[in-house]
Length: 513
Image (tube, rainbow, N blue to C red; front, top):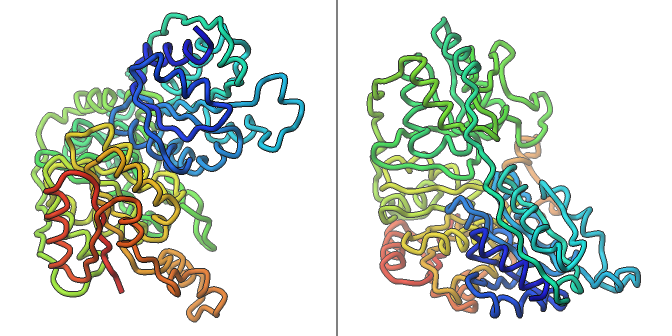
């Protein structure tokens, strides 16, 4: 077998079932090898940001790394933004980047680039193939790093190492053990929580699954504390029997206010909260000075196991009282952010996956989601917009039995709308709701915070998406996705009901003022 066949055989034996790809000439040995090796589904994306975002969504749902196949440095560069989000989401993604043949690299061909420097900021490990015989083992080395660090990792595969015979397939190493619980740390925090003061548990990562949320709520109820979710969680479960938690606020002054009444901040599967941006007069770390910060489980430890041990040590064996859920009123008349969120919560099927890239509209959904049927929410983790449509694509491929609904801002949708084509090609059950206000609303809000009350024509021109406004119905239809426009709450609910009842992708343009 050649190097490409050995690499894909190793990937298949390591459990890789899906490869999201946008290949070029240097990757043709791998393109051909997918047919000869078999067992790995290939999914074409028309843009690299779709490829990397879909791999992120796939891995967030399955917990298993997906593979990407990208073309040299420029192709990889096009996908970096969503790999940045995947890194922040702690998502294992296996990037395979084709490189020129070793003997051609010195010629400085037009597509030659410093791939290593491009890959390092979004990869926990960057490896170059050293030979045909070693290529499969080097792929497995990258896989181990991605699983160990829960981040993207990258293999740069030289074309001649792929097309040359002599490939070898080594044994797949065991997955890294991430079941660590520091019992001494648990005992210390249990003693601390038994003392005076009101603690806050800040949950992130795997602690935001159903079991982690239940344990966190029990501990908070037993100690007189409170539970928050990290801002922009990679995955958050909701539903009957799952305690509803609020994420930390976006603006630093609001986070300071939320933590002001507490004395201890206990981190579980997440880090210290950091302000999204640096604002004049506000701290980068919005934690009041009187609040002591403690780590129960860091990002590489067993957060759920640590919560279970803490619940036992703290005597938190009673279920907390059920919180009253919001009553959803069917939206009527003109659409606004809360009306869109309420319509989705009312119409989403049981077991749905909600991909939330509504940006300014996003805050309205968590406020009403507690009243929705059981679902999983995937959020924008790294702030690089353009993840919604791709992540939804990967999530739908990962869980074909679960409907996916994307709450999507129009400005960020324009970055990666090519993902609609992949949804149509693969026949995925994804309903995309475009919050179409024809502006970057978040930038308008930030201008206001900066004291700009009357933006000039240049500033206004850089926050407006009107003149011309995008015709989302036409754009979706052009990519093979049926689409309708809704201007009222009643129209949006009807459109959602129809879209979720029919197989395949759909798009709804929800027109906001």
